[in-house]
Every structure is written in structure tokens, then in C-alpha cells.
Image (cartoon, rainbow, N blue to C red; front, side, top):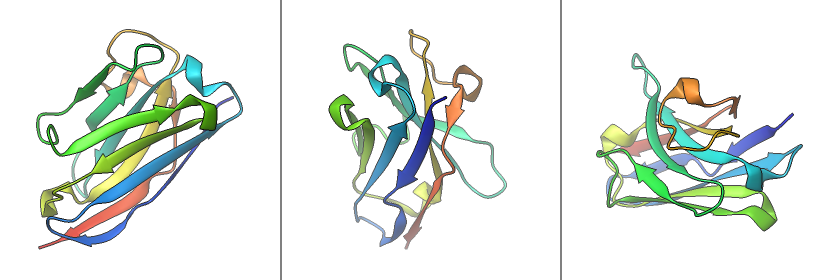
Length: 124
């Protein structure tokens, strides 16, 4: 069983930066596609970014493209989300997720493993 633990959230002013980390344990993380999702109060969980298992191909939601960067270090079993130029609308609980599937999974139903989430709050 794969376990995921997020960290790095916090309170930041608009225009600031944060780096989220997701540490995996239980299985070799390099065999999983990893993704980041977020959920704001009263809204559905939405896709933010994902990075695949092998070629490190990435995808981003249009709302974060050019501001967020996903990366991974399989030797450390960790995936990161660097968030720059943060906006108040980025405020949400951010979740790390993983799936052994290939392709380009961008839906919550594509992912089998989830962390507990880390809160990101951006003040205006």
C-alpha cells in the first residue's frame, strides 16, 4: 500500500510563493504517476498538475499554467509543487495523489492513493 504525506502549506500574501512536498512510502514511488489536486470550500476537488512515471511529462490546469511547476525526485520518493505568483483564488486544501496507470490522468477517479492534504491560504 502506498502512503502519501503532504507538507509545505501555509499562509502567504498575494504574489508570494510556496513549495509543497509529497512524501511517499510503502512502495517504490517511481512506478506511479503523481498528481496534485486542490479543493476550495464549497467547491469540487479539481486537478492542478501531474507528472508521469518515466518521462516526467507534465500537465497543468490552465489556471496555474506558467505559475506552478511540478517535479519529482524518485530517489527521495517525493513529488513537489512549486507555486509562484500566488493569488487569493489559489486558496484551497491541496492534495497529493498517485496512480499506477499510465496515460495522462487528470480526474480524481483516475487516482488510487491520496494524502490528507495541506492547506494553502493566500491573502489579498
